[in-house]
Length: 418
Image 1 (spheres, rainbow, N blue to C red):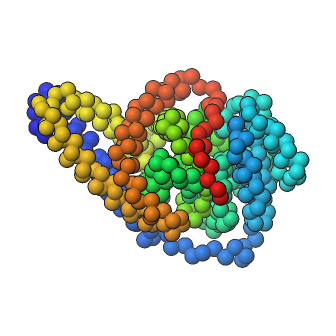
Image 2: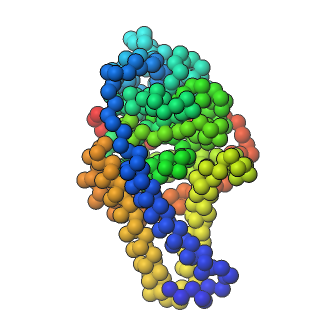
Image 3: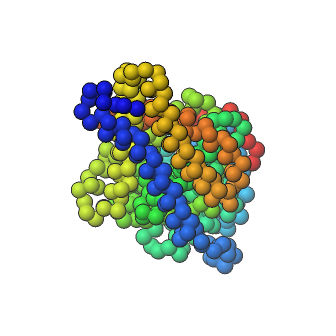
């Protein structure tokens, strides 16, 4: 499309950036994934019987989780990990969660319950759980999560064999409600986009975030960084940056599977993604000084990629609106969108195929590739609007401060059987 009639200096360069940035980043994630598979994904199967496994504390914060917490606890109790304690933290729930937890503690003496009468947020709940725990290693789970039998072994194995500077190991969340279009699109996303990013960032040596759904921590590392930030809406992103700035290592363990529920409504996805985007932007605003410290240079590329992605969202919206306003004909506009969309969707589908093929050894996801066709068309636009909407919220939250509280998330319209 001829853009010379758009009388804004640098507009053509901005439009080129809008096209080339996602194209190049897709190649980057593909290359990183393949390198990870070649050099990092060759660990032999762990002999669980040959290790004297240490005590682990499972921390499960809850807020209005009466529909899911009993199922989560049932599977935690059924884990054959030999030395564990389970701590459930009720963060001022307004439904029947408190009564359920009371009944659980009466029937299962090995389970401890912390009852809070005011909602102070997930980070605060994890704080209290960490203080109450007896173990040096903590595994934090969402209250809808079902942990695979082998997951604790794979997570803790890293701490026993990868050195004292290992602060956290993030697991591999898998989606268990797969009955709707939206849940299947998210299944493709978790298996491909998120998995590719995690693997590539591990090659770089730094990661944007551990997974709040399932992650193991060394308590000493958490104490060293002051535990979780109570004023950050995404405590998992915030603590990841604190750990890495103190030179604690974070690893990704794709064999540590954890089955979770995802939103199945547009409203639920919108709330979730705005919170994620806001949390990432809050962290970027708080930790901007990493760019001034040479010792933190290994995390620069992760930091800059986050801000460039945010800028791309605003640039995409601006370029699209300008082209809509200034297009000399509908055919002119159609040519631009057809060319750019085809190229980017083509690269996206290649990335999705490679990642799904790799992840299929952990979960039978290749058969969901057909749903990948919806991802570029729907999610690029939604995620762009999400990033733009979250930006002013992130700025306001940095000014306001205080506890970052949470609301009960959308766990999906259908509860898949485990």
